[in-house]
Length: 261
Image 1 (cartoon, rainbow, N blue to C red):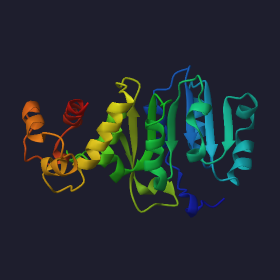
Image 2 (cartoon, rainbow, N blue to C red):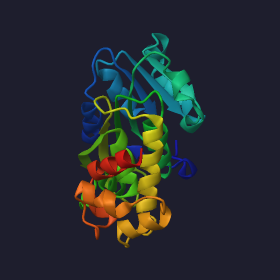
Image 3 (cartoon, rainbow, N blue to C red):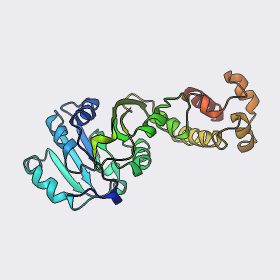
Image 4 (tube, rainbow, N blue to C red):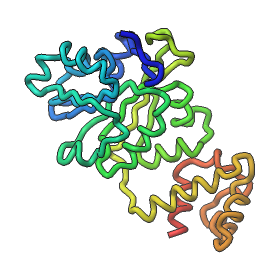
Protein backbone atom coordinates (compact mmCIF):
# COMPACT_ATOMS: atom_id res chain seq x y z
CA UNK A 1 0.00 0.00 0.00
CA UNK A 2 1.76 3.13 -1.25
CA UNK A 3 1.60 6.39 0.74
CA UNK A 4 -0.29 9.16 -1.04
CA UNK A 5 1.77 12.27 -1.68
CA UNK A 6 -1.43 14.30 -2.19
CA UNK A 7 -2.43 13.57 1.43
CA UNK A 8 1.04 14.26 2.80
CA UNK A 9 1.40 10.65 3.93
CA UNK A 10 4.72 9.66 5.49
CA UNK A 11 4.29 6.51 7.57
CA UNK A 12 6.28 6.52 10.82
CA UNK A 13 8.31 3.31 11.16
CA UNK A 14 10.62 4.16 14.08
CA UNK A 15 9.35 2.24 17.13
CA UNK A 16 11.30 4.39 19.60
CA UNK A 17 9.69 7.54 18.19
CA UNK A 18 6.23 5.95 18.39
CA UNK A 19 6.90 5.00 22.02
CA UNK A 20 8.01 8.57 22.85
CA UNK A 21 4.85 10.05 21.30
CA UNK A 22 2.59 7.85 23.43
CA UNK A 23 4.70 8.40 26.55
CA UNK A 24 4.39 12.19 26.11
CA UNK A 25 0.60 11.86 26.30
CA UNK A 26 0.69 10.91 30.01
CA UNK A 27 -2.22 8.59 29.27
CA UNK A 28 -4.53 7.55 32.13
CA UNK A 29 -7.41 5.05 32.34
CA UNK A 30 -10.07 7.77 32.03
CA UNK A 31 -8.58 9.23 28.83
CA UNK A 32 -10.18 9.42 25.41
CA UNK A 33 -7.52 9.81 22.72
CA UNK A 34 -8.08 11.40 19.32
CA UNK A 35 -5.68 10.29 16.59
CA UNK A 36 -5.63 12.07 13.23
CA UNK A 37 -4.48 10.11 10.19
CA UNK A 38 -3.67 6.68 11.65
CA UNK A 39 -2.20 5.55 8.31
CA UNK A 40 -1.22 1.89 8.66
CA UNK A 41 -1.91 1.94 12.39
CA UNK A 42 1.60 1.93 13.89
CA UNK A 43 0.79 4.68 16.40
CA UNK A 44 -2.75 3.35 16.88
CA UNK A 45 -1.31 -0.01 17.91
CA UNK A 46 0.89 1.61 20.56
CA UNK A 47 -2.01 3.76 21.81
CA UNK A 48 -4.09 0.60 22.25
CA UNK A 49 -1.35 -0.84 24.47
CA UNK A 50 -1.81 2.12 26.82
CA UNK A 51 -4.39 2.37 29.60
CA UNK A 52 -6.61 4.76 27.58
CA UNK A 53 -10.35 4.18 27.88
CA UNK A 54 -11.00 4.82 24.19
CA UNK A 55 -9.22 5.82 20.98
CA UNK A 56 -10.99 7.69 18.18
CA UNK A 57 -9.02 7.52 14.92
CA UNK A 58 -10.03 9.70 11.96
CA UNK A 59 -8.62 8.72 8.56
CA UNK A 60 -9.15 10.69 5.36
CA UNK A 61 -7.80 8.02 2.97
CA UNK A 62 -10.78 5.73 2.27
CA UNK A 63 -8.45 3.04 0.88
CA UNK A 64 -6.87 2.62 4.32
CA UNK A 65 -10.19 2.07 6.12
CA UNK A 66 -10.59 -1.65 5.15
CA UNK A 67 -6.93 -2.30 6.08
CA UNK A 68 -7.32 -0.65 9.50
CA UNK A 69 -10.69 -2.33 10.10
CA UNK A 70 -9.16 -5.75 9.51
CA UNK A 71 -6.05 -4.99 11.56
CA UNK A 72 -7.99 -3.78 14.60
CA UNK A 73 -11.19 -5.83 14.22
CA UNK A 74 -11.24 -6.96 17.87
CA UNK A 75 -10.69 -3.47 19.30
CA UNK A 76 -13.38 -2.08 16.99
CA UNK A 77 -15.83 -4.79 18.08
CA UNK A 78 -15.39 -3.83 21.73
CA UNK A 79 -15.62 -0.09 20.84
CA UNK A 80 -12.24 0.61 22.42
CA UNK A 81 -11.23 1.85 18.98
CA UNK A 82 -13.64 3.95 16.95
CA UNK A 83 -12.49 4.31 13.34
CA UNK A 84 -14.02 7.16 11.35
CA UNK A 85 -13.50 8.00 7.70
CA UNK A 86 -13.28 11.74 7.05
CA UNK A 87 -11.27 14.94 6.98
CA UNK A 88 -10.53 16.23 10.48
CA UNK A 89 -10.82 19.81 9.24
CA UNK A 90 -14.50 19.18 8.43
CA UNK A 91 -15.41 17.90 11.91
CA UNK A 92 -17.04 20.00 14.62
CA UNK A 93 -15.00 19.22 17.70
CA UNK A 94 -17.77 20.25 20.09
CA UNK A 95 -20.07 17.60 18.56
CA UNK A 96 -17.36 14.94 18.55
CA UNK A 97 -16.62 15.47 22.26
CA UNK A 98 -19.87 16.65 23.82
CA UNK A 99 -19.04 15.61 27.38
CA UNK A 100 -15.69 13.81 27.43
CA UNK A 101 -12.38 15.55 27.84
CA UNK A 102 -9.77 14.25 25.41
CA UNK A 103 -6.14 14.32 24.33
CA UNK A 104 -4.96 14.77 20.75
CA UNK A 105 -2.05 12.46 19.89
CA UNK A 106 -1.07 12.18 16.24
CA UNK A 107 1.47 12.07 13.44
CA UNK A 108 -0.16 14.73 11.28
CA UNK A 109 0.37 15.68 7.62
CA UNK A 110 2.78 18.61 7.70
CA UNK A 111 0.89 20.66 5.14
CA UNK A 112 -2.06 21.07 7.54
CA UNK A 113 -0.06 21.51 10.77
CA UNK A 114 -1.04 25.15 11.19
CA UNK A 115 -4.71 24.50 10.44
CA UNK A 116 -4.89 21.61 12.93
CA UNK A 117 -3.18 23.56 15.72
CA UNK A 118 -5.43 26.58 15.15
CA UNK A 119 -8.60 24.45 14.95
CA UNK A 120 -7.98 22.65 18.23
CA UNK A 121 -6.44 25.43 20.31
CA UNK A 122 -9.16 27.93 19.39
CA UNK A 123 -11.98 25.42 19.91
CA UNK A 124 -14.44 25.78 22.78
CA UNK A 125 -13.73 22.13 23.56
CA UNK A 126 -9.93 22.08 23.63
CA UNK A 127 -7.87 18.94 24.19
CA UNK A 128 -6.15 18.65 27.58
CA UNK A 129 -2.93 17.95 25.73
CA UNK A 130 -1.75 17.95 22.14
CA UNK A 131 1.13 15.64 21.25
CA UNK A 132 1.94 16.12 17.59
CA UNK A 133 4.73 14.91 15.35
CA UNK A 134 5.55 17.98 13.27
CA UNK A 135 8.34 19.38 11.13
CA UNK A 136 11.30 20.16 13.42
CA UNK A 137 11.66 23.70 12.11
CA UNK A 138 7.99 24.42 12.91
CA UNK A 139 8.33 22.98 16.42
CA UNK A 140 11.38 25.17 17.06
CA UNK A 141 9.50 28.26 15.86
CA UNK A 142 6.59 27.47 18.17
CA UNK A 143 8.77 27.12 21.28
CA UNK A 144 10.94 30.08 20.12
CA UNK A 145 14.11 28.02 20.44
CA UNK A 146 16.21 30.97 19.20
CA UNK A 147 14.50 33.32 21.70
CA UNK A 148 12.76 35.04 18.80
CA UNK A 149 8.98 35.08 19.06
CA UNK A 150 6.60 35.00 16.07
CA UNK A 151 2.87 35.27 15.48
CA UNK A 152 2.79 31.44 15.49
CA UNK A 153 4.65 31.03 18.79
CA UNK A 154 2.63 33.75 20.54
CA UNK A 155 -0.63 32.28 19.24
CA UNK A 156 0.19 28.80 20.59
CA UNK A 157 1.46 30.15 23.93
CA UNK A 158 -1.78 32.08 24.42
CA UNK A 159 -3.59 28.75 24.73
CA UNK A 160 -0.98 26.41 26.18
CA UNK A 161 2.58 25.56 27.12
CA UNK A 162 4.58 24.09 24.18
CA UNK A 163 7.66 21.87 24.59
CA UNK A 164 9.81 19.81 22.24
CA UNK A 165 9.90 16.30 23.70
CA UNK A 166 11.86 14.26 21.17
CA UNK A 167 13.56 14.75 17.80
CA UNK A 168 12.88 12.33 14.95
CA UNK A 169 15.17 11.98 11.93
CA UNK A 170 13.85 11.90 8.37
CA UNK A 171 14.96 8.27 8.09
CA UNK A 172 12.27 7.27 10.60
CA UNK A 173 9.57 7.53 7.92
CA UNK A 174 8.50 5.83 4.71
CA UNK A 175 8.82 7.46 2.32
CA UNK A 176 11.70 9.49 3.74
CA UNK A 177 10.76 13.21 3.86
CA UNK A 178 13.23 15.99 3.11
CA UNK A 179 13.09 17.36 6.66
CA UNK A 180 13.57 16.14 10.22
CA UNK A 181 10.68 16.08 12.68
CA UNK A 182 10.01 16.65 16.36
CA UNK A 183 7.45 15.55 18.91
CA UNK A 184 5.72 18.73 20.09
CA UNK A 185 3.69 18.67 23.31
CA UNK A 186 1.25 21.48 24.10
CA UNK A 187 -0.41 21.36 27.53
CA UNK A 188 -3.63 23.33 27.81
CA UNK A 189 -5.21 21.83 30.94
CA UNK A 190 -3.65 24.36 33.35
CA UNK A 191 -3.92 27.40 31.13
CA UNK A 192 -5.87 30.56 31.95
CA UNK A 193 -9.08 30.98 29.95
CA UNK A 194 -9.47 34.55 28.69
CA UNK A 195 -12.67 36.34 27.75
CA UNK A 196 -13.52 36.62 24.05
CA UNK A 197 -12.87 40.37 23.90
CA UNK A 198 -9.41 39.92 25.43
CA UNK A 199 -8.62 37.10 23.01
CA UNK A 200 -9.65 39.17 19.98
CA UNK A 201 -7.61 42.20 21.09
CA UNK A 202 -4.57 40.04 21.85
CA UNK A 203 -4.53 38.49 18.38
CA UNK A 204 -5.06 41.84 16.70
CA UNK A 205 -2.17 43.22 18.76
CA UNK A 206 0.33 40.52 17.81
CA UNK A 207 -0.60 40.71 14.12
CA UNK A 208 -0.15 44.50 14.08
CA UNK A 209 3.07 44.24 16.11
CA UNK A 210 4.59 41.97 13.47
CA UNK A 211 3.20 43.87 10.47
CA UNK A 212 6.77 44.96 9.67
CA UNK A 213 8.89 42.38 11.49
CA UNK A 214 12.22 44.22 11.26
CA UNK A 215 10.83 47.56 12.35
CA UNK A 216 10.56 48.88 15.89
CA UNK A 217 7.33 47.54 17.40
CA UNK A 218 6.26 50.93 18.76
CA UNK A 219 6.29 52.41 15.26
CA UNK A 220 4.14 49.55 13.94
CA UNK A 221 1.59 50.11 16.70
CA UNK A 222 1.47 53.89 16.31
CA UNK A 223 0.70 53.39 12.63
CA UNK A 224 -2.04 50.81 13.25
CA UNK A 225 -3.58 52.23 16.47
CA UNK A 226 -3.38 56.00 16.06
CA UNK A 227 -5.90 56.58 18.87
CA UNK A 228 -3.69 55.03 21.59
CA UNK A 229 -0.99 56.82 23.59
CA UNK A 230 1.64 54.14 23.01
CA UNK A 231 4.52 56.05 24.60
CA UNK A 232 2.52 56.20 27.83
CA UNK A 233 1.64 52.47 27.71
CA UNK A 234 5.26 51.44 27.08
CA UNK A 235 6.50 53.70 29.90
CA UNK A 236 3.90 52.32 32.32
CA UNK A 237 4.91 48.72 31.54
CA UNK A 238 8.64 49.47 31.56
CA UNK A 239 9.14 48.42 27.94
CA UNK A 240 12.00 49.56 25.74
CA UNK A 241 10.59 51.87 23.07
CA UNK A 242 13.10 50.54 20.54
CA UNK A 243 12.21 46.87 21.03
CA UNK A 244 11.16 44.67 18.11
CA UNK A 245 8.08 42.47 18.48
CA UNK A 246 10.12 39.26 18.14
CA UNK A 247 12.13 40.18 21.27
CA UNK A 248 9.13 40.47 23.62
CA UNK A 249 7.81 37.45 25.52
CA UNK A 250 4.12 36.60 25.81
CA UNK A 251 3.77 38.19 29.27
CA UNK A 252 4.50 41.61 27.76
CA UNK A 253 1.90 41.12 25.02
CA UNK A 254 -0.67 40.05 27.64
CA UNK A 255 0.11 43.14 29.73
CA UNK A 256 -0.23 45.42 26.70
CA UNK A 257 -3.58 43.80 25.85
CA UNK A 258 -4.84 44.55 29.38
CA UNK A 259 -4.10 48.22 28.73
CA UNK A 260 -6.31 48.09 25.62
CA UNK A 261 -9.40 46.72 27.38
